[in-house]
Length: 241
Length: 321
Image (cartoon, rainbow over all chains, first blue to last red; front, side):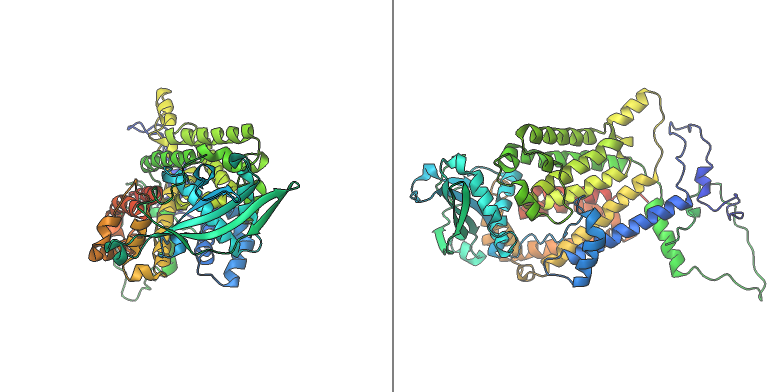
């Protein structure tokens, strides 16, 4: 390596490496040895690799879809190490599109054939009064039950697991499970005193027969109740969990 | 890309003084620096200029606290979700997450094992927050956090995503060199404070890249929805948000222009933020605005933790250069 332009024996990066190894006057440790050319080269390659992965995540995980080439490249080369670290994200935080899909979802379970008025036998999740991130996770779970119906690999899997997990809580092994969502009114309707509605997004019957859990999808229902006032007042179902 | 020498970062006085030299009229002139050289110099400056640990330490305190809150939100329902009769059984979880998804919680469905892992993760996050054993606990905290999200991917939200990114960036930097138990113990032992480091710069720069990408991707995603064009998105956010945080719905129901203003303001801010953190003269101003604007957007959207996480990203964009 020839004489550097800074007068040392090597290019500029070596200068930090040659710093005196003694404490400085302001109480700082001696400057850490700067990375060598080789180290910086390796780090540069790793950073470039990650940035390509990041770009492919943004392009490939978008809800609007992407080309097969992008998806395949990402899946083969980047997902194996980005997924386990929770780095294979979509990044497209849309917040809302104002569609029913963006409404707040919640679960409602009751023993099959129990009258809707039998409030004590009904479980609502998130429970009325549950707030914050904990309630948000239950809402995401409820929404996942609906979204999962569009995927043949997942269809029915989550509703059956949720109902089976709550057999004991409800004291029955034949349950009605519904996912409801609160649809806010249009702004001009709200300004005229209009209220939102509660819509059934998914319904099924889950029962255990001879040790086997069976899921019976129920036909979709239309709007089920008017939204009276606020989220908590929407359903008179008390928290039983 | 071939890394370039860091001549511009040399200690003052170590560079030879330039001399006034007028070449002969017929002498060949040196070619102007080409684009590749300029990009290489920028790359070196952006990723390898040593940075103080103080700002990263502030990010550590805030992100660690936020991660602990998100971690805590799993606690009350941990067994209901992941226990032996859990709603999100390992089979469901494996169907839901992408290939290569892994979780430490896959190893056990017993309540004792679940709680042990949960407590271990909480300890790692707490240790990271206060800066105890930071080089190790930062990695452990990021691993535990990603692992918990993988155990129930359908439960994770945007705040979890952003927080996971921040934790990995903290694992790269040396945030424990300042405002930490580690630095306190080192000072008591008479060891000198750590000088600026390249790892801190890489951590901060990664945070800036992600902050910009997150803002840009959010803006692009929103622009695909009609409600962000017709100005009504703020209404749909306010009407949906939890009442305990902000209840702007009654206000916005009778204020069309305010609704439009908020809607377009959110999108405009995201675009300005995504670009502004790369423009030297306005970078710190834009990042400073992000400290206020992101939490407000989070409150409006009913995602306060996401807003807080984005504000922490904005804080990292305040790094000195």
